[in-house]
Amino acid sequence: FAFSFSAYAETYVVGTSAGFPPFEYVEDGEIVGFDMDLITEIGKRQGFEVEFRDISFDSLPPALTTGSIDIIAAAMTITEERKELFNFSDPYYSANQSVLVHEDSEVGLPVLFGDNDIGVQTGTTGDLWVQDHLVEPGILTGNVRNYDSFVLVIRDLSNRNIDGVVLDKPVGETYSQGNPVKVVAEIITGEEYGMAVAKGNDELLEKINAGLEEVIADGTMDELIEKYFE
Ligand code: ARG
Image (cartoon, rainbow, N blue to C red; front, side, top):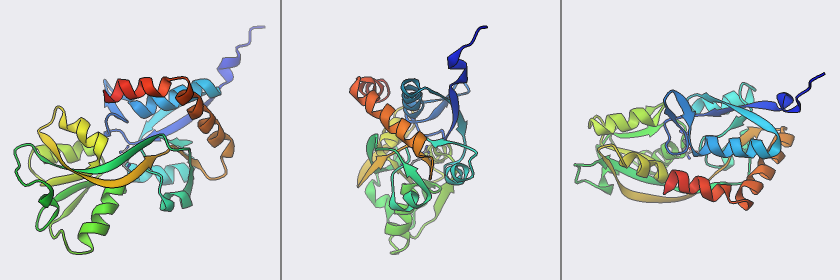
């Protein structure tokens, strides 16, 4: 009788928060991007398939810990706080934060001081940085506006509903192409992105790390970087 082994390949649900180009975004109704290609390539080499689910960034940790997703692939920065909640793969990309303003604005970095309204995505390292370094010391006295998606943050900045935005620099650069916004400063935070799995799921973590190593060694990583960043 006919028997196809590949039909039995495990399928893992990968949670992401699209609206973060070029890492994850929606194109023609599909979730695509650097992270989606990367985890797909890792799966090909380690014998698993993936299916993507788009949820708000701050819902990713509970989705992983309750088991409704198996993997987070969301340009998520490896932090000590998050390591308490789940396990990270080896790092696959380095990034800093950046400050964006409207392209017609002349204010620059001082947008972070005084009575300005700053947009952030809830639960991101940019959100936390603004709280810790600007709000708590009283440097920023305007409103910090929290959003579920950067698509909406960029729309509000383009419409001048907010004065500035703090977000990961590679994504700020991508949004500045094709939107009336510009990057005016870099904040050196030295972040590294990792994929995450639930604590105890060591088998899957090992597959991801082994696959990542292969993808780097065989040149696929360089191809993905060229495809999405150059
Ligand atoms: N790197 C930042 C963090 O970990 C932002 C990630 C946002 N990712 C996303 N897919 N929207 O907090």
